[in-house]
Length: 264
Image: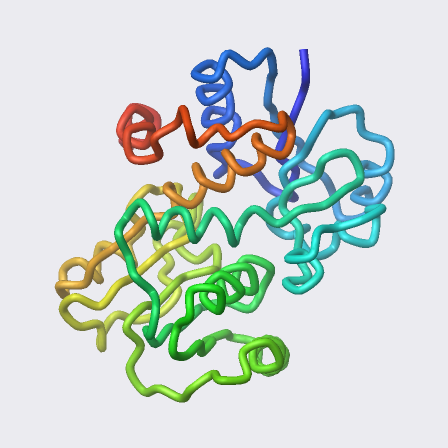
C-alpha cells in the first residue's frame, strides 16, 4: 500500500486525511493518507529521510521546504513555494487548485481588480493564478510592512501591466485568520463590502468563516476554501499516480458528499 501524508507545524484544522481517503476509495487506489506535525528544526531531516510515497506541505513550510529538495517545477520556482512532493521533487498545486475552483464556480477573473490578504506562499500561488487569468490588477494587504513590500515588488516584476485600483472586484483571504481554532478572527473588516463583490477564502475549516458570513450579509458572493482544497488534492493525486482523476471526480458533488464531515 502506498502511503501519503500532509505535513505542517500544527494540523488540528486539517481535513486532508479524510478528503484523500475518500478520493482514493472513489478511484480504487490502494493507498493511505495521514498527517505529521513537525517542528521547524526537524523539517529538513524529515524531508530527506521520510518513507512516504508523497507529501503535501502546509503552513508554515511551503517556502521553507524548498531548500531540502532536489528539484521543483517551473511554477514553484516563480512562486517560491511548494505544497506537493513526489520524492524530492516539488510541485505547486495550489495555483492550479485555485483556478479549478474558480472554474467550477463559474467565476470569470479576466479584467477584474483583485485584492489578496496575506503575503505567504498561498498568496503568491494565487497571485500567479490571477496573472494567468488576465486580471486587471492585483494588490495585497498584510500586517507586516516588509512582507507587503516584498510581495508587491515580486508581483510587479511578473505582472508588468499591473494597474492601480481603489475598489477590488474580488478579495481573497490567504491568511489563517478565521481558521479553527481561531475561527473568531477575521482577516479584514467588511465595512466596505458591497453587493455582488466576490469574497474567496482559502480556509475550509470552518466551511464558511465569519468573514464570509459577514460578507454574505452585505450581499457579496462568497466562495469557501473547500473547493480549492479538493482541487489541489486531486492535482497532487494526478502527480503521484500519473492519472487524470478529474475525469472521475466532480468537485461540487464531492463537496456535497463531504458535508457530513464539516457540518459543524
